[in-house]
Length: 297
Image (spheres, rainbow, N blue to C red):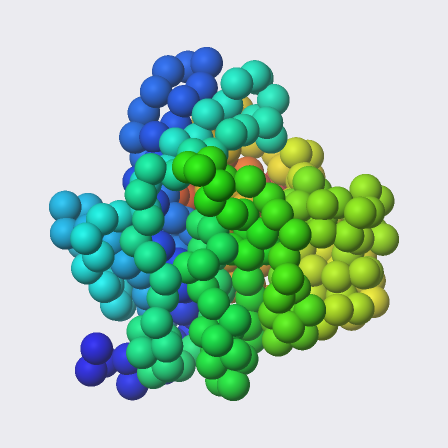
């Protein structure tokens, strides 16, 4: 771990997930994990990226791929990787059931305490991987701290991931700068189906900026203003990792751009990501072209 003394633009914390994706078009295994989706985006944006993860030795090809992009990966070898089965029963890509077959376990304070970055993005698969103690440690750093709400409200109940009330909600939200949620989670968390009202309520609990994804695009609440963009993929092939890609591209862009620019950027990057399975692998030129042709008003 000696090189964690380096200072990064952005660091991603989360477990690798081996995802079995089951949909109308068949069954396939995809290398997932929010940290993996996120690190791929940030590295292709030219940022200095760290990734902190746990996975089984047999899945180390993922670490090698990330290192190939110039990412510093701090990988803890666990007895087993987190393995998920994502089933899409209908053509609506927002309807899915997620099963857990194994977990890489919780992160420890030791794994996160030496990381230094301008922004840190927490993306766990389920509650129990990133504790309040770990969030408190990360909040002490001079970093923008972003997290996906799924890290805390998804609970492994007899092998199935289900959203549950979150007792530490206030304590965690008070320590975050950016929170990402989706429309379904926002309603569950706050009993609020109006996304703008939900965003304001989340903001009141602590996060300065709130990113909400929904089936058509994303809504951002920052500086007392709302910013909205649509997802415009030519076709949806890779729904898994949509939210992970969105929060990563938004946070990475926010290091050097306004909330409005970051919202547009995140919409474009996420649109291109959804056109293929697995992490974002397009060029910055393609993102810029999409921004110019579809998002410029």
